[in-house]
Amino acid sequence: MDFFLFFLWVLSALTIPYVDAKYDYGRDVRRALQKRQSAQPAITTGAPRVNGTIPLRKEIREFQGYHEQWSLYILALDWMQFTSQDDPYSWYRMAGIHAAPFVDYGGVQALPDGGLNGYCTHVSNLFPTWHRPYLAYFEQVMYNIVQFIASLYPAGPRQIQFQQAAQTFRMPYWDWAAMPPSNQSLLPYSVGGEPDIVADGPNGEQLIANPLFTFTFKPLDPSVFPEFPTRLYNLFANNGNYSTWSNEAWIPDTSNNSYDSIESLHDTIHLAAGGDSGHMAIIAYSAFDPIFFLHHANVDRIFAMWQVLHNDSWVEPMAAVEPTRTISYGDSQNSSTNLTPFFVRDGQFWTSDMVRDHQVFNYTYSEVASKNRSEVITAINKLYTDFSAATMSIDPGRRRHLRREGFMNSTKSGMGHNKRTKGAIWNKGGSNVPFVNRIIKAGRYRDWVANIVVNKHAMDASFKVYLFLGRIPDEISTWGSSPGLAGSLGIFAGHMAGSGKQRRLITGTIPLTSTLINRVYDEKLQSLDSADAEAYLRNNLEIRVVASNGTVVEPSQVDGLKISIVSSYVKAAKSNAELASWGRAASHFDLYAP
Ligand SMILES: *[C@@H]1O[C@H](CO)[C@@H](O)[C@H](O)[C@H]1NC(C)=O
Ligand SMILES: *[C@@H]1O[C@H](CO)[C@@H](O)[C@H](O)[C@H]1NC(C)=O
Ligand SMILES: *[C@@H]1O[C@H](CO)[C@@H](O)[C@H](O)[C@H]1NC(C)=O
Ligand SMILES: *[C@@H]1O[C@H](CO)[C@@H](O)[C@H](O)[C@H]1NC(C)=O
Ligand SMILES: *[C@@H]1O[C@H](CO)[C@@H](O)[C@H](O)[C@H]1NC(C)=O
Ligand SMILES: *[C@@H]1O[C@H](CO)[C@@H](O)[C@H](O)[C@H]1NC(C)=O
Ligand SMILES: *[C@@H]1O[C@H](CO)[C@@H](O)[C@H](O)[C@H]1NC(C)=O
Ligand SMILES: *[C@@H]1O[C@H](CO)[C@@H](O)[C@H](O)[C@H]1NC(C)=O
Ligand SMILES: *[C@@H]1O[C@H](CO)[C@@H](O)[C@H](O)[C@H]1NC(C)=O
Ligand SMILES: *[C@@H]1O[C@H](CO)[C@@H](O)[C@H](O)[C@H]1NC(C)=O
Image 1 (cartoon, protein in one colour):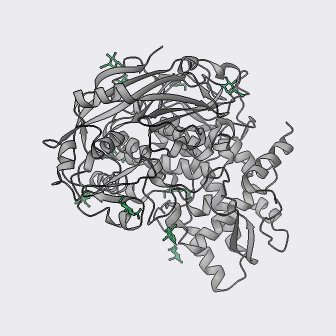
Image 2 (tube, helix red, strand yellow):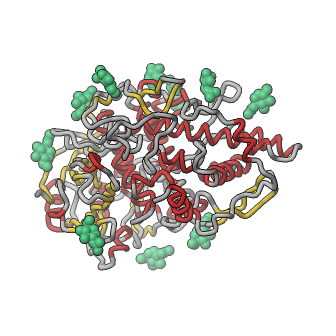
Image 3 (cartoon, protein in one colour):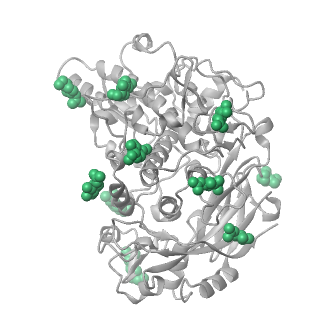
């Protein structure tokens, strides 16, 4: 497809039909910015510090409360999305660094056989580190646009206010694992809710097409996705080895404890956010969706938090299993591999070693600003334990507001249960309730997980593996929120060309404990102990695989698929200052093996 048509297609899909609903500055201001922009794209610095201090990237809901920064952010997104595609600072070219439309950026040439790949590193130990300069570069370009737009406000107190706010501007992140405040949707309303938005710009308030709007992703009930926080908690507490934590590549003889990775969890979010055919569900186009950067800023924040907890674990050499624009299959990828196309200065690229401390790009997040381990642990316990048994017996009363807001319906003490969805939120005040005592015994509980291996490119497109522990509705589109669903794993793939299509075994997990606890609560299961739970799972667990075109595919048609049930004893946390600790995984049975 012609690039211009492609661009229009992407824009029309993202921003709803009326593409001319951009902000009207009342005069031609574009040229003035172009003069101020660097003539040398891809030199990556991040944004400057402010009087020596490092500004925070904020969660989008909080960020929205900062009127000036929020307005400038919306205007800068609008600006980038309506910048001509031949401009290296356009949304089109910036998003294109990731993958489609597969063109060189910053003069960094593709390998002879790499022209149909993006620069991004997937199924790779460089997955978290490559995205760090990518985001910093995006942030720096956006920061420059923000400064420029702030300078356009008519001279006076308003201009001063906007210019001051612009100085500490950093891109926001979307925390998809945290329970949103009160009864808000998991996806912020500003992203999922409104196709138009009022922008308070230099030329007054105007209604413009919301540059964040994603029409494929409807507002969500967070309890539909209990596996997001559960998997995240487990990744913090139960995977301290960068090699297995960072990416989803299947490593032979890997411990049965470390099938999950930040990349695999990130994939599942892409699929949830992308719907079946949304851009977020297709690697090649995902960066065109504004939610991509909100999502990845959160992944980077999780990476920074994990680094504080596991400070001494770092990139170990690994042969590339997925080629990129500048890396061939089998090349060594290590901590000094170039993170292309991001230059430190002319001729020198950033490497993982150089971006190990995210503050090199002059941004940080509140949880890691002081790099204090116990502060990170406290934040994890505060944000990500709603569906985890790991902290079930501590912190009385903290969840009360959730019940009050109607997310769930507490019918018995000890637990709230949302009848509409599969999620359940533990009432942490309930440690003396008999129900909790059936889960946690002598400070320990058994954690159940489905370990999944599959060929990422089994279908040449993204697909989902669903596990059910209850009735499977006829209507596939309702599976995601079905009460019988134990969890799902999204495999993020697609549109790989040439050598990219090779067989690539990857791993991921679906946590089962939260659903099993529901069954104990419903008195369908006696306990989480080996004998009880294994028998229950053997008799009730069902697999379904759904292709991106919405059809069900037989597991035998999915190359490389293997699903094994394992469990570990977990020592629950006794206070918010500690994380639960996992014992060795015991394997129980193969739910599916070819
Ligand atoms: C980031 O901060 C460092 C240390 O203060 C400084 O050397 C560097 O120039 C800053 N980056 C930018 C883009 O200003
Ligand atoms: C940084 O310091 C300058 C000079 O003291 C001051 O004018 C400016 O407001 C400060 N910026 C911020 C964001 O505090
Ligand atoms: C919570 O949800 C109810 C019902 O959907 C709605 O009426 C109410 O305004 C919401 N509250 C907040 C704070 O969003
Ligand atoms: C981390 O895991 C990888 C892959 O299993 C292994 O090769 C490596 O030795 C581990 N690193 C450490 C420090 O244990
Ligand atoms: C690290 O990777 C680069 C290629 O990215 C390679 O040239 C170099 O030899 C590797 N170093 C080690 C120690 O493996
Ligand atoms: C790891 O710890 C060292 C020493 O405590 C500290 O200097 C460094 O900044 C830490 N690194 C990260 C990424 O937090
Ligand atoms: C880390 O934070 C905790 C809790 O705020 C505090 O008690 C402790 O002194 C801090 N540690 C360091 C090294 O600053
Ligand atoms: C909560 O559940 C009880 C018992 O099933 C029911 O009577 C009540 O109407 C429910 N409340 C809400 C708000 O759904
Ligand atoms: C849907 O996708 C699957 C898997 O790629 C394929 O086997 C099937 O033929 C497709 N069905 C339709 C109707 O396109
Ligand atoms: C992991 O689980 C599988 C069964 O799925 C088993 O064959 C294998 O021995 C286990 N590996 C370890 C290291 O325990």
